[in-house]
Length: 174
Image 1 (cartoon, rainbow, N blue to C red):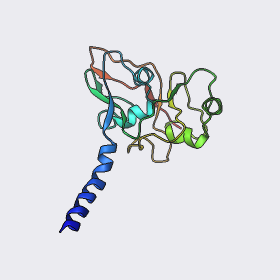
Image 2 (image 1 turned 120 degrees about the vertical axis):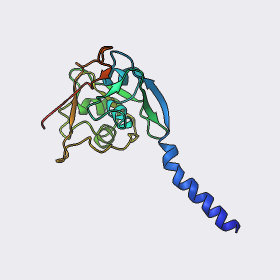
Image 3 (image 1 turned 60 degrees about the horizontal axis):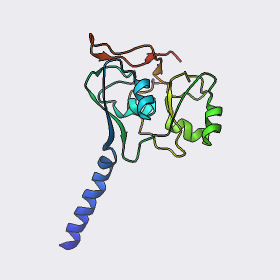
């Protein structure tokens, strides 16, 4: 009897562990004028992580955020707070060298960066942690051919009139 109870309790803990690992540990409330890259810069979270953790509220284009909506910025065990804001002249090679990380780690933490690393833009917030800490890629982030569906641009901002926060991204034909 004790063994069955112990096995049942151990099994319950095993199955609950993934749910606990996904518990949000940092939050942000959307305000007027917010764009994803701005939220990311202000709160040390990569642009990818912000969009991935909130895929149930916003899409890969980071659209449909509402003023007052609560966003998750990080989860236990998958929270990159070591970030780099891309500026003019940055490349994957210079970022890797600056933070002493290899391309596998950089790309694994930032799956929104394409294989050629030619979709960086000023203001993009990248995870530069020394290990892989990025959350899983939510369904719908990539086209059927494996290319990225979105390329952020910092032009769109939320206004009080529309209440809908467009992402700082536009669909890109790759």
